[in-house]
Length: 248
Image 1 (tube, rainbow, N blue to C red):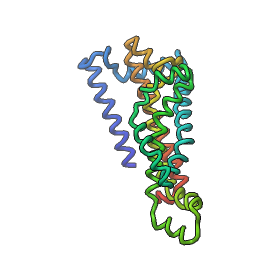
Image 2: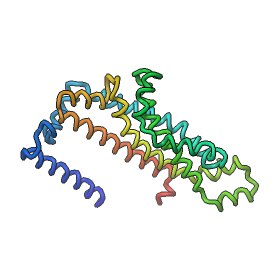
Image 3: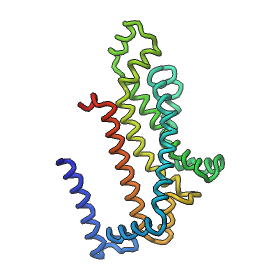
Image 4: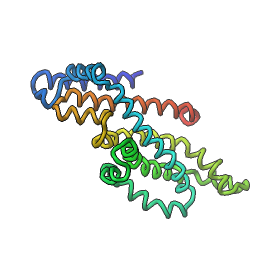
């Protein structure tokens, strides 16, 4: 309870300072809208501009790119962490690609996939896939050696050790890695929606910027933060349900 109280208290302090700076005239409303104007613009977005659909479109894009990267990245990471040959083959390339900004692929993705939904999902995929793969590989490779040696002593094959020892032992860390990368996926969605998007939170933010409507811009940013926070809390709760023994 005290953690919740402290967390909420900081949000209250943040909004109080924001109100003080903007309502006192220290910062022009052209550059930073006050909280009340921001909420007013948010209500206007939902009631007049069908912003709820924009939110849904953005959520679908993030989940699409993230789920696709998890479906491919988790098995590949398990292979890299379990078999040294696979790790030696792929780890340098995955580490290299991990540092490439997803936004740099936008011109190529527009040429390959156009400006439709596939291009936006692929940007989020590129930003998430290499992170997931490497984090899963690190989690799997840190499996306790005594457990692996005990399984071999009892007559297990390599594939059986991976399936019955390494994956169950690393499942908690893999789930935690997926939770972290889901948060990072939200940072790529604005980049994905900058070009060619007709709907989405990022599209709304770009349009609001051309109109100098900082209230709508801030509301869009806060909306992404709220959705990301809710998804993070839900992911934590699912992890606690699936791996209750690890959190006891």
